[in-house]
Image (cartoon, rainbow, N blue to C red):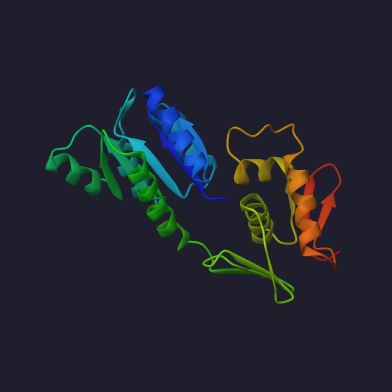
Length: 221
């Protein structure tokens, strides 16, 4: 699932942004300051970061500039009430990819996030495959033995993560972290439910195997 980080210290605005983006189908993590955002960003891949410029612990463009120098590539959309040309230029010069001035229309923000996530997708392999299972990441199509499968967003996300680690055991906690957002209960059976549906759609011979006490592994026996 496409994953977005929202960093905004205004709680009401942050809630509105998170609600809007989740409704649009994204997994969303959230933070109210740079320190919290940095911890989350270093632990998980994000396809786009929506980042308020002025946060309680500093100007976010300095943080982005520092991370860019270390090779960080996630697309960044700056949000700010500062609409002067010099401020916009500074945002781009420090590593921002887009710049949206407050107040803004939520539909416009969603479209800008979609464009940046699409750009981020080019950093991923265009095709993943294992035996007769082929995932075309550009088209978001999955075929088994040439037959097109119809998958939900969650099924696709779980299968994509397992494919990137084909042959290796993957913990349920890792699947929760990468395919769901902070709303998911790590003690629930959501992973098992999605994997059960995937197994049914992938049919025989079985490709997703349970690893006792750990999680799942994609591959031959």
